[in-house]
Image (tube, rainbow, N blue to C red; front, side):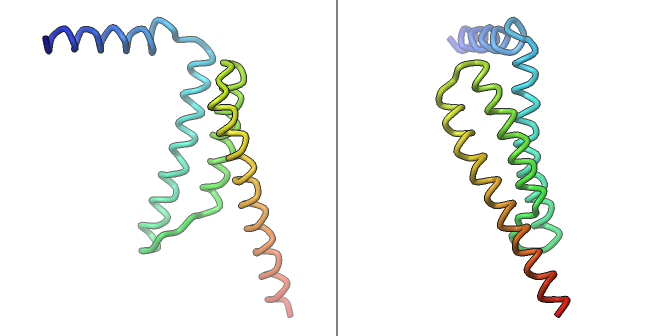
Length: 112
């Protein structure tokens, strides 16, 4: 029984990652890697600071990975991916806008 499950899992993995491999699968995997990179950047930054930190690079990786995943969802006609990534990208852009606004305000205040 366990051997049958192992074979079924192997067949599934082959079908998903080998038999159906094309440009869009590679594109989607790169998008997921970019999205994963945001967590790696945040973790490393937090470890260095000794506290929880969300660097601006986190948001840029979020936008890159999110937009690529959105394109993948559109091409593959996946409504769940399209809805999730379209809305999330708006939040990522807003966070970058807020960070840049804060930096400008701080720069102006420092010049006074």
